[in-house]
Amino acid sequence: MKMTFRWYGESDKITLDKIRQIPNMYSVVTAVYDVPVGEVWPNESIAALKDAAARNGLKMEVIESVPVHEDIKLGLPTRDKYIDAYKENIRRLGKAGVKCICYNFMPVFDWTRTQLDKVAADGSTSLVYYEKQLKEMNPLDGELSLPGWDSSYKKEDLKRLFEQYKAVDEEKLFENLEYFLKAIIPVAEEAGVNMAIHPDDPPWPIFGLPRIITNEKNIDRFLSLVDSPANGLTFCTGSLGADQNADIPRLVAKYAAMGRIHFMHIRNIRFVADGFEETAHDANYGSLDIVGIVKALSDADYDGYVRPDHGRMIWGEQGKPGYGLYDRALGASYINGVWEALRYEKENRNK
Ligand code: DNO
Image (cartoon, rainbow, N blue to C red; front, side, top):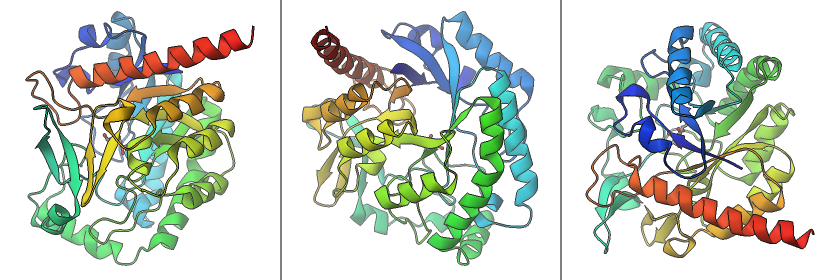
């Protein structure tokens, strides 16, 4: 397991000199943020990120994300030029030493929460998802904005996209994903890069838009679209775990044994009557069996990347929701501790 931490580049309030002090920190997880979706990233920008990480004793082996242009997800005739740019980004990143690229195939919106600052009993705040609040949200009014969303869409763009997606159901979205994978996976193989799709968060259709990376059956189908190790997963425990029927430790064990997990996003959530709330990473704070999840990784001798996912805001910190320093650092340390204890047991048992 290689521990990593998301870093939003030079504009991130959480600087690399802090990230490097988190025990066992191996690599940053970052991206070029100032290039519009669908364009080629300048080599200089890639090199600048890598150099900044290296000056702080950190690698830059994981990119999150190289976003996928909507025309690719929609399957429009213009998709080929965006796919060409995507391929070029894979080649450039591979040359720069990147080993894993995280991306998603969610139409229009990335991860969705209904409130970003829900106060818990201990005074910390976190992101939550309540069905009742979701029903009150109107994505078309152009005023909604969440940290993971592409903020370049104007009201008119959103209207147009919603219109276009009327022609795209789950089957069509799968077809468009297959077309994309068949084009990019051979390039990734050649570049020594593992592609790692992020599941849809939450794992069900939002605002009437289709979502497909949602459950075991669909993930099996996704992996078989192109049966190559380079066609793999970012296994996000909090995303897939929002489905109360999902047995997350079993799924981690299954896909890790297949060698198809390249990146783990580890976080905990707690089910409530109307949805879920993000909690501290520790197993006893939420509904997910985090120890069972890390054990599944250890049992598989997982050597891919892990990052603590969303943290709460604690100790008065203010910042990008889900991406403060303190609680993510606690999360990394907790995961490291569980991992170390499990490895200690396993290795001594083998003596
Ligand atoms: C949320 C993140 C996602 C993720 C993308 C990958 O915190 O995990 O925004 O980066 O879905 O493309």
